[in-house]
Image 1 (cartoon, each protein chain N blue to C red):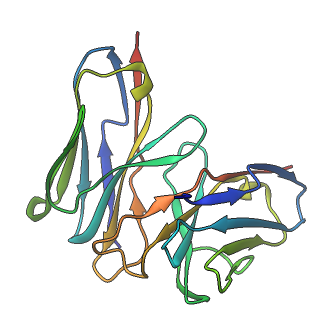
Image 2 (image 1 turned 60 degrees about the vertical axis):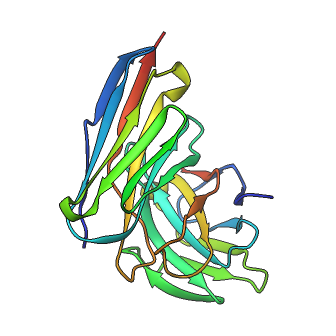
Length: 115
Length: 109
């Protein structure tokens, strides 16, 4: 049973560029969420996708956008990269939109460095 | 929104020692999970425990929902227990996890 998988593992981008990160949820899960974790901090919620629509969003600018495909996999896109976007980006999946009674599982993350 | 506070922020132990990590939250929750983040960044699920007590080997956790706190116990600690431990909660009807700042545990041989 494959867990949550993310790609790429590490990447370096230049300020102003755009980046796309990818995530495949755990088997049987239909909901994907993205989190940003800056160094020394706890993860911060970016947004959640369910039934191919953004259902909930955290306090992140419109430069952060996403997509969910019919097979439940997801992409996170960040435009006009800033140095402050350097972080670990974590994808999480769960069986359903709500978290009551559901364990949420995380992938290994994508380390983004903006130079 | 809900505030999550973890204590202590840092903890250094000798191998074999026991420890207790605490998580306080400011409102009622429908999900509470404990995670261990390894040095490569992966968040590993330890417990889903919005209330009650669970045990898994040397680890156990207790959540007292009415008093809005959870405790993670680590017994007979090993060097492989080192890393950051996070508590995360979800608000009722919510779909996002809100994380504490973590407890960084270092177990010395």
